Image (tube, rainbow, N blue to C red; front, side, top):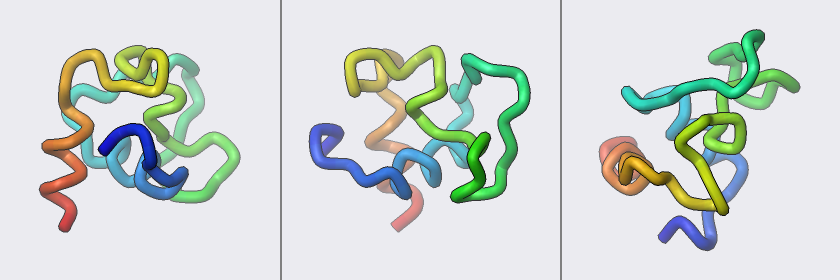
Length: 63
């Protein structure tokens, strides 16, 4: 599932993820903002994959 995720899904998962650890200090919960939370700016998101296996469960809980 992680291979074909949209930018919106990355943002929604990050906002709702208990394991989100930002790589920068000025992130916001505002979806779509330039500095919004996203898996792309999480320490646990490496090589387009969640290394702590939270992406799929969090995404599924949003449905």
